[in-house]
Amino acid sequence: MIECPHMELLGRDHEPPVFTGPGHITINPDTCMRFVMHATPRDGSDAFKRIVQAQQHPYDYRHQFRVNAVGYGGTEWSGGWTSVTLGDVTDDVWRLSGPIRSLHTGAEGFGVAEDSSVELVYDRELRLPIPMNMVRTVVRDGKQVLESRSAGSKIVKVLDVEIEFFRDAEREHLWAVARTSPNFPHPHLENWISEPLNMLLGEIVTPRLVARNFGGGRAFITLHEASGRPADSLVATILREDPLGSGDGLWSLYKDILTFVAMARDADGGRNFEAHPLTRFYWEIIQATKGSNWVLCMTLASVVEGLTKLTYPMAPQEANWPEEDIRSLREAIESWKGNDHLRGSVLNYFSRRTTKGLAGVLRSLTREGVISKPQTKAWETLRNSSMHGEMVVPWSDQEQDAQINHLVELTHRMAKLYIESELGKAASIPPLNDMPNA
Image 1 (spheres, rainbow, N blue to C red):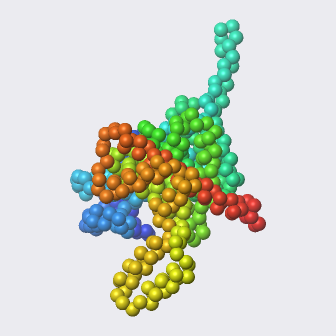
Image 2 (image 1 turned 135 degrees about the vertical axis):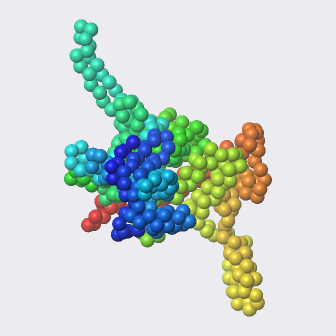
Image 3 (image 1 turned 45 degrees about the vertical axis):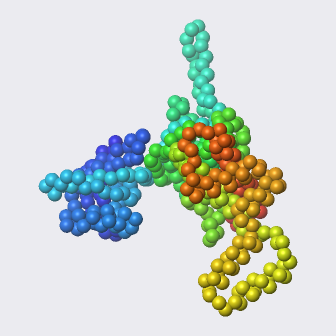
């Protein structure tokens, strides 16, 4: 708990605080953070009106509150946007509370890294194949005369950055540290490091603590909510095996995923600060593993469709008729002077017939031996049934379990094909440190 002699709730930019007063911030290791504030409103009537507006417009940030606080040690904390709950009001003192999704503060001076870098601390150990911490003791005449400790660590080199993973002495937390580089700058690096872990571990992985070190002894510290629950099955891991036993295979795939995540660009050519689409697909799979078989089948089938569209966009269909006949027919349809809606429908149907649909792409991959026939069959069967309201039995069934397993394998196979495709594109882009005037 952080005791705060001064807290304030802010409305719009450049306006004075709506509420001020003492309070505290509770940091629970198992749930989100919360604040409680014994607040005095700047204007009681206006303050109450703003609380009502915030509740009536929960998706409009212009009506929401931001919480700031100062601890007894003088540390200033920013809690970001929050939804406020009004409690008791006594003698113009209002009891306010609400969730805090992340806490931010600045740090400088002693103990802050001098290099531009990031430090991430995960709130649990994570099942990564990292060498164990070693303790060496020397005993003479029954007495210990020397003790030395060495932390087991794993260093992964990706493009122009080295990322070191290691555990603390109590093996309760995992650390990841890395210096920034032209290919891995602030603020993207602190997000990118965690993205491959979601797919490799099959669980939602976010650091609890992030230190963005700017260099020269200055840093920006963020405390996040607790991360997701550990995985209880192998369904959502792209490895399809226990990560602890995968050894160098995990780190090789980590390197590949992080490479294409770092090299990816948005429509405007900028880096992606938000999670990559592949990461978001795996977030959905991870959450679906906690639901019913029906939810899992719909999610996996949808992810296969999404990955197929990303990897093989609008693949042309091999025509069964002469190209000149196809072009002449299209021109005749376009020049027809009848109902516009009917003409548009026919053209849309015509376009679908001249491009290879998702099922066509999967069948082509099956003929090429890239994916298996049982995998394609499972996708067609489970997709059609689950997407059209046919229930999937919630209990274990031999035939259905086999189909679901084929669908799981297909999903991860399509993810790997997408990774290979993106790596091929990234290989044609020179790393920033190889570019002139980088």
